[in-house]
Image 1 (spheres, rainbow, N blue to C red):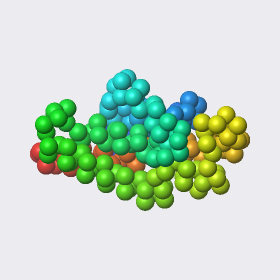
Image 2: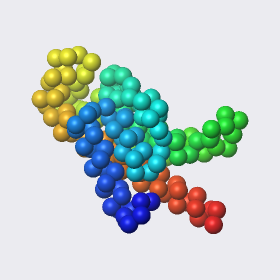
Image 3: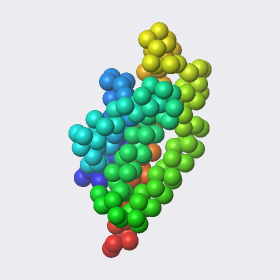
Image 4: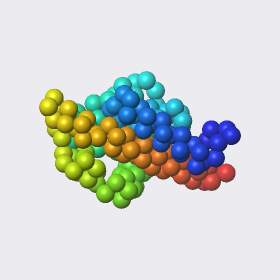
Length: 172
């Protein structure tokens, strides 16, 4: 935890940072990961770069929400092992990812970018199409999607902090 901040203050800071990144720079997956990286010390420049193509429902396809994927990447960074032979860590990381996915789904009501767009904007926009991308912008895409990104970051941070707390209780 950041010294001098309560858990709630930290979560607010992460949510606001991610929301601002998405509103100003775009790329939901990387915006989630960057806010978590900055405040929870997860990942590095390479993980940030690698998260980029997951935006807009995986490479602008409207599939799994990029904000969810950014959160899952952070969960993996917090739980997975660097050792490919570490099967208990693999199982633990998959279980953590499953629980985070369910938490996101419960909070957002969907996990697909296209479904979240429909709920927030009234319809799905194919962002890969320049005309539809412009319609997405005009419909408030960069008002609503930053809210989703902020919330996903907050959910991931809360989840990771819970994991860290449990780990500390187990060790000490």
